[in-house]
Length: 145
Image 1 (tube, helix red, strand yellow):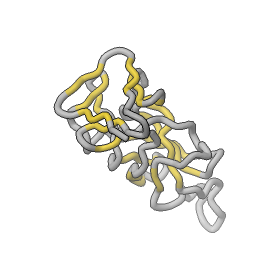
Image 2 (image 1 turned 120 degrees about the vertical axis):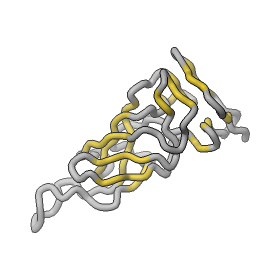
Image 3 (image 1 turned 90 degrees about the horizontal axis):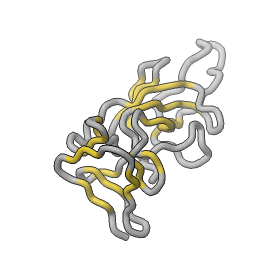
Image 4 (image 1 turned 60 degrees about the vertical axis):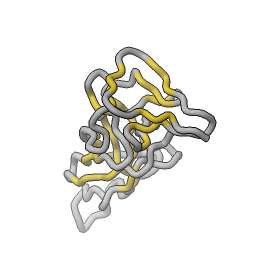
């Protein structure tokens, strides 16, 4: 199993599909790049929010109390890792599997300053998202490649 290691300063332009050897992952400066998955997919999420979104407010129960967070749209999906679009900022959602009601934004990468797609850094494991209704930060701990 061999990873595809990207390092230094690279700016991908156009359409390309990066493929690591059997079972390997695409890494930017040593960290796995995040890839898109369907919103609320049954497959594992990218991260877990610290608390549910309290809508409606207490004493009622939240309408979607799930803590899982999925990145489902990248701002530029032209570069892929094994057929899945690599995340370069974009949209995420928090909630239960099959719903993921609450929208959020993927923040600019702090873990990968040099590997970009059209001048926007590829997001990697350890980067953050923000759930919009609460402003809560969510660390992305799973890459989903």
